[in-house]
Length: 213
Image 1 (cartoon, rainbow, N blue to C red):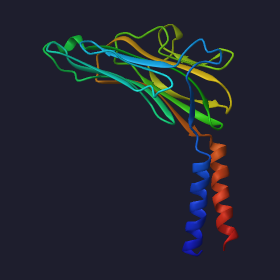
Image 2 (image 1 turned 30 degrees about the horizontal axis):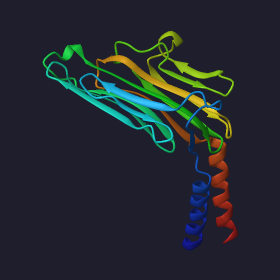
Image 3 (image 1 turned 45 degrees about the vertical axis):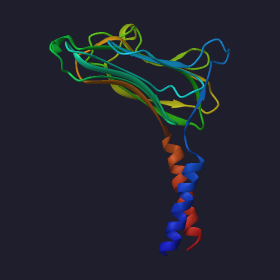
Image 4 (image 1 turned 180 degrees about the vertical axis):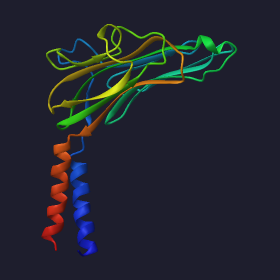
């Protein structure tokens, strides 16, 4: 195979993947306009950091005390991921008390194309979590996935949920009122192309290469 032809086919494939990029379409409110997308973070000894749509829901709060060291809680949002974090340095004069903090993100969104949503979480090193640490709902408010407290389920793990384009979704990720007894705790969502979409893009690149042999 001619190298230039192969590169051209690969470029077409890359262009196709870019054109069909799977991203979140963030909405400032739910479909009724009654509820807003927002996030906030507050670590003990730190300052409250809040963010409201339509800006990116990126927040961070760090608190320090001589007794329990440094605690940082945060939320972050990119084109294809959402995440809440709790970090504690395990230090201080009384490290067995752990670090205290709370981070919350509520986001209404769609996806740009049919895709898989990988949900991962680990708050096993905390001594407290809310009734629902994670809830994903569809437009009818049916729960697609939830975990935490009253919802049950493991305190760490991962699942994959299929999402459909042009559908309104809502998510709440809440690491709340929590003492962190180990250093890193998180809840995250990452959007990836469904396997069928990847196969179609790969076939398109292969066909482009063959046509130019």
